[in-house]
Length: 547
Image (cartoon, rainbow, N blue to C red; front, side):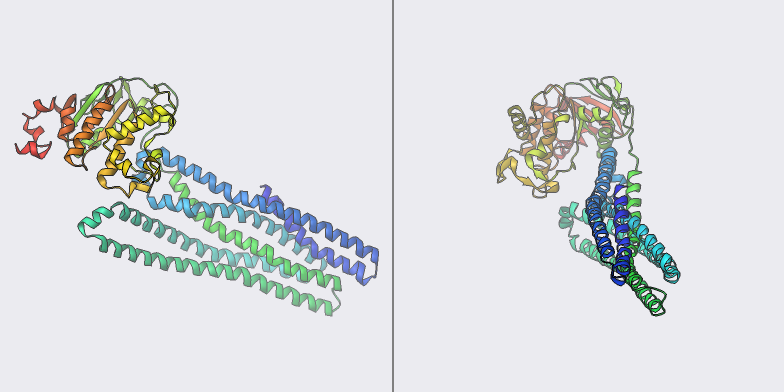
């Protein structure tokens, strides 16, 4: 609002300058009145100083008007993304998130910035038209007719630009999604020889995007050309008509100079108004994308905002009949589909009748559930940055009975213990700066097995009340698998740990093994006792099943 006010003051100052110069010519030069000339000269100087100060305020306030909406928009988008949680991959494409963060917030900020300029342009154009109309109805009428025509033509062209901008935005999102999918599955594509077909598909999409971008650029160029041409034609018309009126004795020399100044100035407010219209059209497309993203609802209700978490206590899933004791290593042998279902229900990634310490998970604060119950999946993301920061959880997510600072000596000991338990010491030692080494997003420099061990180290370092691990040793060799199994059992002693796995080393070290078939507990006992069950043998390690 304040930037619009200063834009109006700045535009008004520029509009009044030609009128004051014209009066100085008529009252001072033509009438040969030195006092009047000096007086009007000082008035022009004062108006110039005021206009300059307004321009300084406009620059500062416009920068704020441009940056702040984009920053606020990104805050809202980030908050909504966090609220969506695990559902974000299913409900929001990576292309949407990337485009919002890269271009949409810029367009939204520019809409506010140029909208304030447009308000100033309206004030300037109206003021100039009024001054012209008061001096000469012919020239004033010309301006009053021409300005709306220019705005109508520009608005119609801007609508075409908005349509093409929306099409470009859609194709950008689709191509970004495709690029993300290719990067994520690059190892698989190389393994099956699928690089060339996917590269060809990406090239075809890129060319389609290029064609759409060229059409959008043509519309943008047409709007820009119109913003320059039409005000220029109006300037020529005003000068020609003013000259005709001066020759006919209907305008004085001072009025002629003032009209020329008005005509030259009119290009500024007209450009401001047309730019505000075209930017608003593009900002409308960007805002629609942001609103659609913000309107995405999470799968889970957040539960009560406050309230103490119970526990430690057993974690139960009535749907399958599985009970995870508050202490000890429980291993569950099941199909991959059952493993995902159990992890989602027990980690409260889907609403169910699961309970923790006798209380329904759905009735507990979601933030508290995330703090006390951690699900470590095989595809958990590794973020870019120093490896230490990636492996050490933020302070608020530390377990409530741990009082040491996340970067103190005790924390370093716990991090080393977690790295050793995950059999990841060799990975850290091989890095040039060890834990301080900057790693790429997704841990691209690590093999699949190394990524799995680092994910396990991060999960163990979090030290939650309940840790749920989904097949944490599937990508490593037998020797490393045995070390990881021993590390998990040792480090998690005294805490509840649920491992959904068919790994024989983990099953050997489990305090209790549960067989789940078709979503329900079918048997339980020790690994050795369950080997007598052929259903169990069919799911565990092939070497055992063959026997």
